[in-house]
Image 1 (cartoon, rainbow over the protein chains, first blue to last red):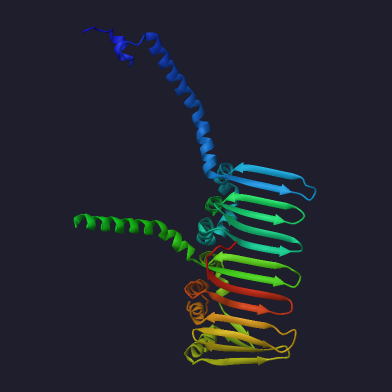
Image 2 (spheres, chains in turn green, red; image 1 turned 30 degrees about the vertical axis):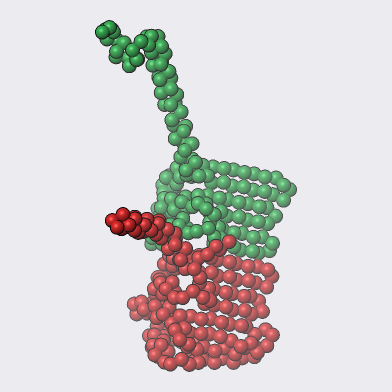
Length: 163
Length: 190
């Protein structure tokens, strides 16, 4: 029975594979691992953004000009993490008795099925506030068309963050 | 024989699993919603559609002072909470009847008890007369007056409202506006 040097047995290469090829394989594994480490934060961020959704603002004026501003809801979440410090203590005290009710309303909004919750039509302008899928959509239709959409769970986070 | 029993058991387990999977969706679909529709003379319109639970939470935000030291002015007479509850108890115990009839140039208004409802209805006497059709469950007024002395319990009233049968509560129409309030179970609101 032929014997092999101990180093050949330890590098995991199958018997008969040349040492240079095994080294290339090992280098390739390192390159892939390094790339994975570099890309992991971006992939994680992209996945989180995809899961948490976007806050979008769309404005279309009478002249046909359009503005579309998408912002990852994640950014809003981070902003909300700071919000309690920005809200004056007096305002927080005044809102405190309504904490439970506000949280309950926010949770109900998050749980409720698709519907137009509010519609106001006045002087040729129509304002609607609707639940559409996992989003809350505020639309103003008049001379200008404004649409603001945000993930409904953001409202819960907002309320929980503020009161 | 044993195989047949196993097959039946498997079918039963499958049916239970399916029921468990779809029950939450069915439960949320059966939630009562309150709808408020106001239309003005000049095409202005307000539509509010809310799950009753959400409206109930909003009612909980009514400041406590609003429901305290209740007084109601009726035809020049002031009724405080004690008078109101006494009046209500006598109405509650009375048989079905028309309790109030108000007649003016534009309409005749009737307040009557019918089954488990208080009704306020009108008969317009002129082109500008208001059409009123209010149907209010007695249990809601019971609940409203069920709080501590001198107070109105709005949350209890909403609870009672949520457990009543769906249908129209308020329909008012006069020359300037139309107001409708009703409760139904959620279907596609869009």
